[in-house]
Length: 118
Image 1 (tube, helix red, strand yellow):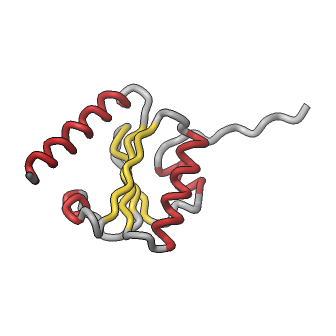
Image 2 (image 1 turned 60 degrees about the vertical axis):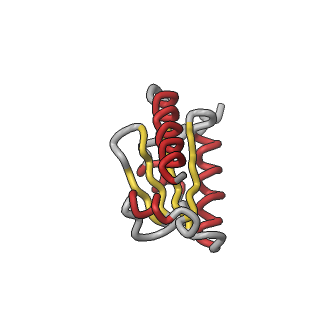
Image 3 (image 1 turned 180 degrees about the horizontal axis):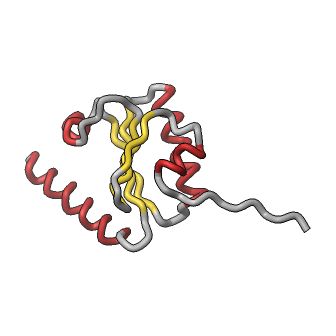
């Protein structure tokens, strides 16, 4: 049964990569249950994705206590950890994602320009 689930996860991941390979982002956020830092990280990264990426992202939130094999496979040493899988290069950010500028820089996302006053 585990092999079947692993094949499904791999197939889903490959499908997402193909779908997003032109202009989308594939992100994985590793959390530790409902801890304050983990919940803050989820809220913050969702806000950043909605504001800066709109429909151009696939975010997977992974609770390391529920899926430790994924954390081991990604060599997660701290949580919350955000991994940008695509576009390349792969990037890792650790923390609650509250510093929007640091997250945008880490993900290589251009900041929105402020509107010019008339």
